Image (cartoon, rainbow, N blue to C red; front, side, top):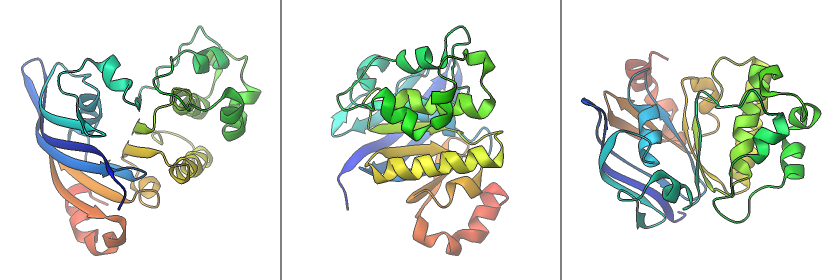
Length: 234
């Protein structure tokens, strides 16, 4: 088993007066793909944001590569080699595709070059001079993912990257995640699309009401069908 890269213990998170996470416990090994499953409102996106300190308040423990991060501001957490691809994508409409791609600063050495990214996402190379508003939803999602690969981060937090996209784009993103896993990236995904997540993940956690209620390995997936139906309706 590879070394542990992320360990979350007793994580609580708040938005103002709202107590959203209620003691999340999970871990991720280096090179793994781990998927957080759950219904809308279960706390999955808040978990990703809380790992980076992007919530109003948090308590508990988030260890990244053996270092406690609870006292660190988000920009210093990012410099430990962690990057977030948000559900809303965050593409700047006034900038070109390539300008969006070049915008984030490096957080660690070893990020992909622009040429490497264009080899992985040929659509972006073709649209490199197009403004963000002129890209399709699928191209914007590719750009949002490609943008964090330049930073040198090796722990990627991906939030609903398949949502609302055409099947051909979802298939392309699936191949991309598979390639990133082969290249040694560690990935934590939030996904509503179980068919997208199932063949990609090494392990799964199921969240409900701000807690992780189940965790299991991909090899146990068939044995967990009734439990998945109970929590997810799939």
